[in-house]
Length: 134
Image (tube, rainbow, N blue to C red; front, side, top):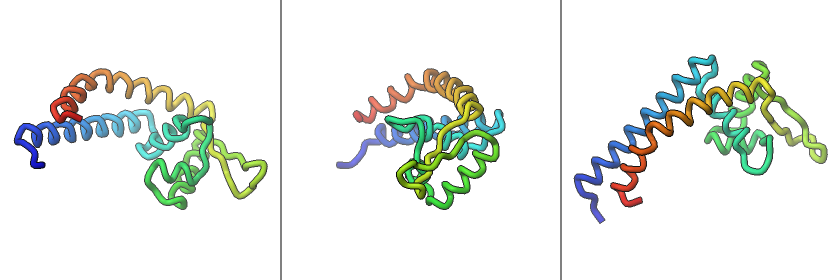
């Protein structure tokens, strides 16, 4: 099924709105001294369904990065006292990563700003999705 000109316009506008949000997100993270990738990691750790920590492999999967890149990212976060590592009691090869109080505070600050921005742009995103009949 081919798309109409209106549908292409809605797709283009939706992608533009997403890019605007990503630019907002990256800028907000930078403004508090947290690189965008680190902000994404903090959110992925805190937002992991069902528990407070994630394994390196789960973090890598959530961020679409290789496990060795996730290790480096966790090392940088730990150096900034934003995350803590803990070995799994039954399998010392498995390491869980969770947020420290400092990491949680940084994430809370960023998430509050992100939620406000999503509230601002949400109606437009819904309008575009409706135009696409998604």
